[in-house]
Image (cartoon, rainbow, N blue to C red; front, side):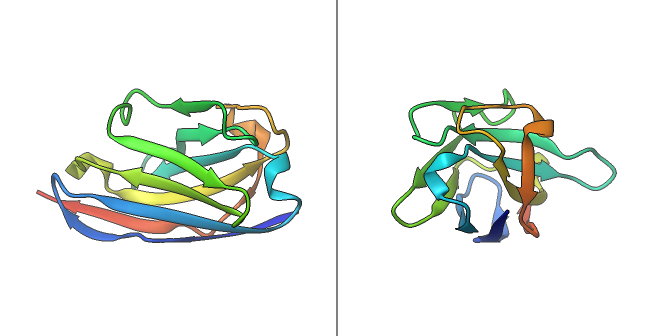
Length: 124
């Protein structure tokens, strides 16, 4: 099992930037892919970005492609989500999650350990 703690959320104006961090402990960090999900009120929790265990492969949902960047530092057991050009529709609770596999996956069912979430609010 992996313990995950997100940080870096907050309130930002449209067009601004935030960087989320997710610190992991437990399983050997480089042995599993990591994903970032978000959930807006009344909506499902959707994957927006993912990165393979070795950081060679990444995935982005169309809604964030070109604006968000996922990265990881396996030496620091941390995954990041750099969010630029933020829009009001990016407002949500953001979660990081650890997959059961090291291979890049965008399938929510492959993610088995979750953080508690961090709120991101983008004002217009």
